[in-house]
Picture: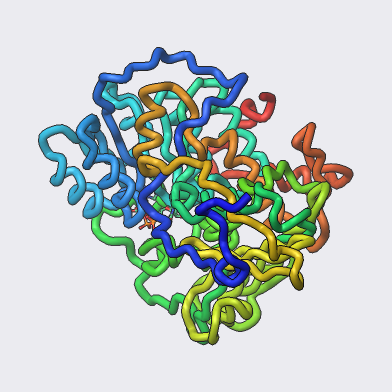
Length: 450
Ligand SMILES: NC(=O)c1ccc[n+]([C@@H]2O[C@H](COP(=O)([O-])OP(=O)(O)OC[C@H]3O[C@@H](n4cnc5c(N)ncnc54)[C@H](O)[C@@H]3O)[C@@H](O)[C@H]2O)c1
């Protein structure tokens, strides 16, 4: 039967959606079996704080603070200039802190945005949960397998509401792609390829001779649980630069894969990968960083394989992206028996296998638009339902990424038992999956026994 949604073969093939990805979010998902101990409070105002008031944190804060039911009450940053500038914007309601432990004791504080560099995410997320605060945690959720499970378990144990900062999940285009994949039009999908590429050659993020922190900057606290190293201005500037250091960001795979592999994991309802293989290195870039400039990953799931490529040395976005120019490109290819779908944040294209898709119809829109990624979280803070990118969903995005880093480190494949959530047959990998934090910080092993 033909409907208004029917596409001609030509328009179907050339279908390109160009919807802005930012600014929408999925409706809350109530996941069965998860605790919702705090009573819902639909009419109350949310007292909001932020830990890490840099570029992304301020973006998240602005999105929340513009809502009529949000009051900003606390701002924490180890960089006084940044902290004070944000406190000044909310001077009637917000207190400033340099130490998150003090801030989390504040009574009129319901929920916190955590937007520090990634090496801090686990400790801060767990500390916030223990203090009874809901969390909007920036991606990457964590950098190690044990961290990923511990954050998920802490959210569960303390009955908190969590949202990981993969805002593209809230976009219209991802919704349309998920509907197409789930329609079955592409047939069974045996392979998925994903990538993020940009050309940073030859100088990468550059080099800095500035080895003295700015006045009042708490370098000891910035480094926190990571290995101590000399201050570096480029490293502390923003996340774009953290991506060049392993100890603080894990490189560009945790930097970008959370947004990108999110789409196939959502569309295909993937669980954990059974095997993760990875290879790469720092081949070409010469800058102050130490992370790989090329990283290739192969994940084996029960019914398909998925690959990931991160390159900082070449920006070719594969054929459907047109002429190579030195800019950042990313994408996801779904290879099905009937055709291939290519997607990025704002568009998708379909290339049929011969005439196998000639009678296909576009699936109806079934996934409702969202009120915004942050707004969705705020709504859930009130309703006590879990949002679409809660840790209970996002752990399936984070675990493949952290296993890929472990595989890269060890130079061998990692086998994973998805039921036990444990690495199989590799004692060294099991040991390395639990990070050793620099004293006085300790990895909270108690959260591994869920
Ligand atoms: N979702 C996205 O599209 C997106 C985009 C960019 C960055 N990010 C993520 O957001 C996070 C922050 O990135 P950014 O670009 O804002 O970095 P940034 O360096 O600009 O900001 C981080 C801030 O955290 C502060 N900080 C560090 N340790 C702290 C501590 N212990 N307590 C309090 N403050 C501390 C720093 O002083 C800095 O001001 C990263 O995890 C990054 O991956 C996400």
